[in-house]
Length: 166
Image (tube, rainbow, N blue to C red):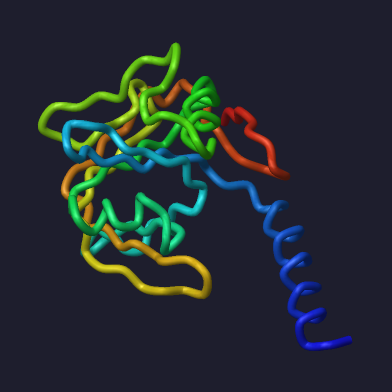
């Protein structure tokens, strides 16, 4: 087995194993030039409580990567079990940035946030780190809030969105 074949083999195994790890689903969003730009991400992590830091993994050549560093303030919405449409819309390539037949993202003085989400974070771009084929964006949390605890969470498992309750 060549090194390239071995690399492809381990990539396939890692992808298969990682699909078995249930993750929450988030929408990362910024406002730039009067427009909302957003993406679905399940690669969100709380990095530190003191100071309050969170991380999200993005593609280095993606539009969101450049906007996060340029705009510097972004919102992270933790989706609830009824918000699969948001997750699918912002995960689609070649879509426009406004959700169709969905409520628009909340805006105003804060970065765009999905209405009625389970929780949200308003973050300032702290720094970024290249980690393999992605960039880890570190955000300093300047504000956060929790939604209705009676509403279940949206998770991603085995390549599918699913609702889950306590």
